[in-house]
Length: 438
Picture (tube, one colour):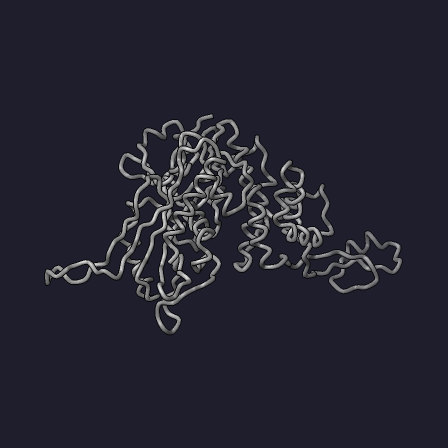
């Protein structure tokens, strides 16, 4: 197997990708939306609602004689070629930072490892399994999925369409029953049966029960709703769901869950990448993971409007005009602070980033703005004071009351194991938070 490792937000000569040339040819200059259609699983699935990751973002973008990677981390495969995109904070060994983000944000089991060359396909499969509780909980917030099902009956209480052929077959000689069918709104449908089959599949894994205990209430609801579940029906249920995908926009969370369940149940080592969808893998939005991780650190002192969930929407202008979602707004109204989570390196924070935060600061009467980003070096904060005056009048000078600060969380890159990394980053988290509490 041919394997290449690269890091996010990095630039590499095209020659480096020669060992995975076929895979590179399949993914270079293709958007996330295109890769999703070809079988790659992208998390979070609602890329169209994210600000830092968009449908037209590319995994590998050609820049002269180099390829440039973005905020995406994960794993891709094609034939016998594998590409692992690690976080840029991965040291010589394992990618502890990526693992830590998954653990803190998605509560992944602490066995995620992108290091073993021989078991990349198993790593991919584990990722899919570990995401199941998140997607199940997200979908079930809309309630159990319900749709019309045509049930066939043969009794004396006719309520639907009489099935003449079946009636003759079943009721000759006539004994008082009528064969008929009726469309009924039911929770026990092909999609909920698919979810039930996935639950039963995961239960048989060594860590299955530990994984499902996080969503035990949702699992119970699914089991109670699928009274017609039969283990031998799995392939039939899979085929029904492949032909009838969820289409209604309101149930898009169920569409994502349906797709995940199909990937899990159809996974076979010897079939990975077979057929029309030859590119496969799973990609994580590093910017989204970083923002949710930062929120877990500072949620007690900052509001966190969520554009994906439509929560905490703010408006720039009167009349419900100018929808905005600042990443973080301090709860302290006396000394209001606007903070923006940025996964990219400090040197890449500029231009549009400055304009966005300054607009938010003006809207919320904030004198201080912060960019919260991960960093390797033990560097001090960079504070930028807003200018006043014009170059035409030769009176430009720094104000002393309005500033934006680039404030980094230091990420250990030389930890010997995951436990050491966790202990060291917790110390860094305390230092990071202390600068944001006023």
